Structure formats: structure tokens, C-alpha cells
Length: 167
Image (cartoon, rainbow, N blue to C red; front, side, top):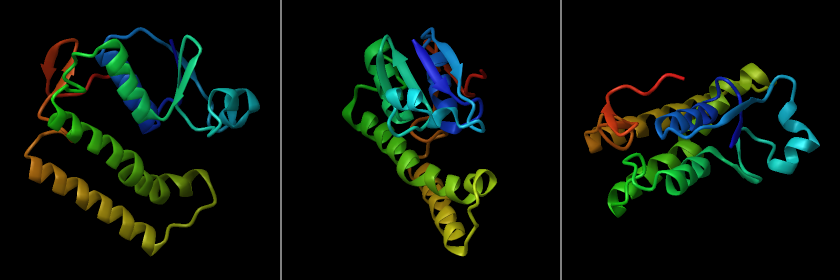
């Protein structure tokens, strides 16, 4: 199994953390974002979106960090508490994963990261959207009463820990 990823991008870090937490061996293939390695035709064969990360599971290419996280749990560790079987608990995990990918991360990326890497301007509307997404996340944490986005624990190698694993 290979993971094509960047060293510090949140989607790549999430997948790397999950692979480590689930004790799934993998080869990390660093993608040089600044050199636009993800924009090549060779990379597009794995992921036409040309986004990072991409998982290569013996020729099965899967982009999108959320889809990768779900796939890893379902295929390799179907009994993990990271992706619970209980429909309500899983629905909360799925919600938080989708909230992150479609709302939270996109607003942070557009306002904080895009101006660093591209010729994007920060706007009052972008700041407003960023603050709305941060407020939403705080609301979810308060309403759920959990320490983390979807639960009070992180499971690492079948033990409960209060801190995420370091890579």
C-alpha cells in the first residue's frame, strides 16, 4: 500500500494518523506540492482531480481523505472504534468527516492557506465564512459534550488515548 501525500497538509496528516492508529503498514510517497508534482499527467492517472492525498492499495487508487479514512477502517479494521458500527455513532463520525471536508477545511483553506500559495486575496466575506465555520465546530463540540469532534477518545492499537499519535 502506498500513500501519496504532502508532509503537512491536514488531509494527508489525517490519513497518515489513521494508518498509524490502525497499524496498517504503508509506504509514504511524498508529493512535492510546490513543484506541482500533483499536476502531472502521471499523477492524474491516479487522481483526475489532481488533489492530495491518494491511496494506492495494490492498484486500487482512491483520492479524497474522507473516502480513504472510511475505506481503511471498513477494509482493514472493521471493528475499530474509530469508525463505529452503531448507526448513530457512525452517523456522527460521517457528519464530522463531511463537515470538515465540505465546510470547515474549505473555509480555512480559502482564507488562510490559499493566499500563501496562490495569488488569492483575503476578503471580509472569506473571514466571515471562516468565523462561521469555527463557530459551528465549537457548537458541535459543546452540544455533543465530547473532547474530540465525534467522541471522547481516540483509539490507537486497541487502547484509548487522550492525545493523537505523532508521526
